[in-house]
Amino acid sequence: MKKIILFFKTAQSLQIDDNLLLIYKKNSLHMEQYALITGASKGIGKSIAIQLAKSGYHLLLTARSEAELQLLSAQLKADFKIKVGILAIDLSLTDSSKTVADWCKQETGQLSILINNAGFGLWGDFESLELQGQMNMLRLNIDAVLSLTHHLIPLLKTQKRSFILNISSTAAYQAVPTLALYAASKAFIRSYSRALRYELKNTSISVSCSCPGPTDTGFASRAGLDALADLAEKFNMSPDQVAELSLHGMFRKKAEIIPGFLNKLSAVGVWMLPKALIERITAGLYKR
Image (cartoon, rainbow, N blue to C red; front, side, top):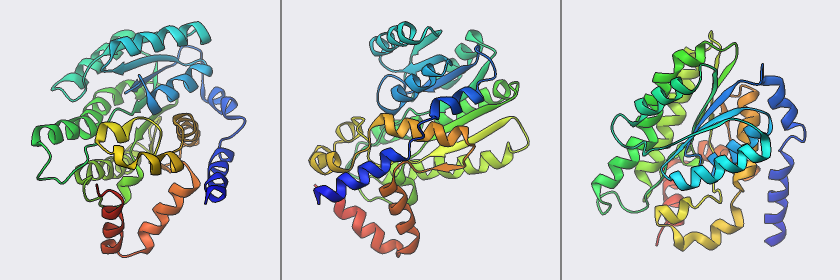
């Protein structure tokens, strides 16, 4: 079993293009381009920030923790000599997306990348979970993405080439009992991204959606899934792997990106098997 896991992890890492940095730079039309990343203080968002900084993009970073943003900003400025703006804000709060959009417009007129990464999940039966917490999750996972994107599309259109990358999940491909609203919110983002991509196909904006599987980001702990820590450790991808593959697909203008061989395999399997069977399997995985 360990050999099989090692094989799949190796296969995942081999998907990362050795010349990824060159791909970034080919898409960088000038050194004053900016990228806005939500949920940038840790996990996939942090890894995306580092990857874009390596290629010379200036960054606008948001997250709830000002202290973590300040540490990351100092690191990026020192290592890559770029400009970094930070804004500590909770995007689940009303009108916070407009606040971020207005701040972004004040910081630069050269925004060419929007990464909608902020999000979280809650584990448990729908009726047993506190309703307010679930609604907060939906506001962050869905409302913030829609609002921020709507506010910033006009600015992105002013660039010769620009990108929107929405971070979804492999949970978007099936219903997941005990993660019901999280999976539904990610399915919404996946469907919305494809529709928006089509609507913007004749503009300068390319829209992509990345659907990573288990990733070593602390998601399971926040969702209350500590019981699956051992299993997650065996199959998790690193945030760096997910960030590199997601950006690779974004710059290639792919509609959907599923980082990792096992995750691609599971997404295909969902379409081949009866929905009722998939729901029984996923429900069994997430039992206490």
